[in-house]
Image (cartoon, rainbow, N blue to C red; front, side, top):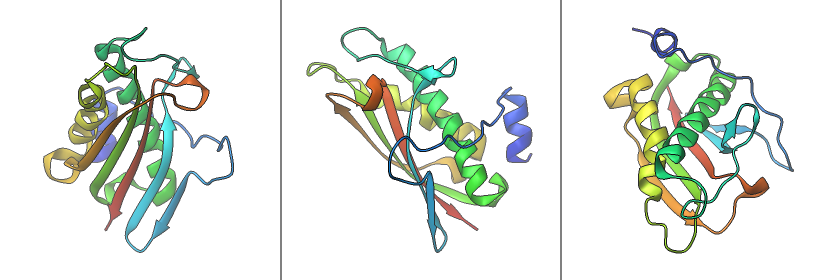
Length: 152
């Protein structure tokens, strides 16, 4: 089954690449690696604002991270032209807007990791990962995620 068949089965439509909000580009390819800039969580087309441990739950966070993964796949598609060319999702780095006592950043980030595994498969979708709790993310977003992928 192709990546696009999996996306269709999951009822996922890839969004277009969002315009950068500052002085950077959405992606850079060097050799066989594609580096995607951080993407912030959005809900209903607007920044998904919140801070874990204060006003957003871990379960909501998993949905926010999943939404970010969909945006990342849209950017990855724009970068390489065909998601079936992705040999492997190499690394995911997640920043989770958290209070000092919130400790479930890894569970929030699972929302993205699990979707990437489902779409790209157990071998190509398995990736190294970091999940950090941070005091704030631009525009008050609850989650920001960046990704590195290898192209065939």
